[in-house]
Image: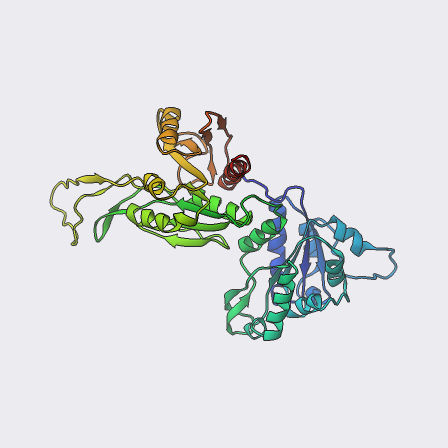
Amino acid sequence: MQLKRLTNKNIVLGITGSIAAYKACDIIRMLKKEGADVKVVTTDNALKFITPLALETLSGNEVVKEMFPEHRVVKTRHISIAEWADAILIAPATANVIGKIASGIADDFLTTLVMASRAPVVIAPAMDYEMVTNPIYLENCKKLEKHNFTFVPTEEGPLASGAVGPGRLAKYDIILNRVLFSLQKKSVLKGKKVLVSAGPTIEPIDPVRFISNYSTGKMGFAVAEAAVIRGADVILVTGQVSIDVPFGVKCIKVGTAADMEKAILDEISEADVLIMAAAVADYRVEKYSGNKIKKSGDLTLKLKKNKDIINSVLEKKRPKVLVGFAMETNDSEKNAVNKLKDKKLDFICMNNLYDEGAGFAKDTNKVTIFEKNGSAEELPVMSKFGLAEKILDKVEKYFREN
């Protein structure tokens, strides 16, 4: 069940004269998929790379390209669209347009719109590496950042000129992340340090074998992304997963439960929130073999219990808010409530492996949240990002009330 994160939001997409203008079609699709109403504003040079028909077909709105179109009465359209917009995204943005905005020049519809609008502006540049490293361009970016413009850093890779280096338009999910961040109202979590664990841990048997579980890290990564969008300083401690780290998140990769414990304890002293979404191995092999164990009949492994990470945290420094997860298969409520009390959590998210929409490797989850005050909230099946938002809403409530 996909959460549409831009529902009821009006987004102006400004497109400028970069070869990356063709990617604007995918950006429109992404914004529309998230529930946004999109109006496209182009510069004249942008239309040398892409047609208004394509943009109008995808956005469902007329493309605005002229400040003073002939034979039409448009009055103060730059004002009405400026007031309509919840956010302005310029993607791709050229050095020329960035320079004009930084200098207060408003000589076409897009730059005039930016000048007239009080909506947040997100700029995703795309240009050759010689331009993106030009000191004049960099000064213009710094100037706009001082005025609360949000920039999406370019990617490194092959460029249209044949060169390889920085200058490519950022990935779409990173652009979306910055748009969501720009729309975020004042959050209690802004500036707070949020520590999140994710994924599985592994316990080696020998150099080629290990014990682990089915966790993919999707839930923890969703929490980290949702927290950074709210302005938190997010540190993600994760086991071995194949998910891209959300933009703006500091990631610490670990292997064993002991590695994860050390990483969390190293960071916990300054953490305001700890959300333990990782599936930490309960046991490790008592005796690790430095050489590959040869196949010769049955193999018996003796396991030793790992230390409980939350108990170790409580011995060092309890954060303001402590959140746990409980994946169960039977006696779910009883086990979750016991874990809530034993680990002195503020609340715990309990899900049952056999519930439809829950479990490992899925994009959705279905949980019941038990709180230390005895209340419980059963949530329907929702996207893991949607659940992350619900969790952070509760975290913010704890900060406001305690």
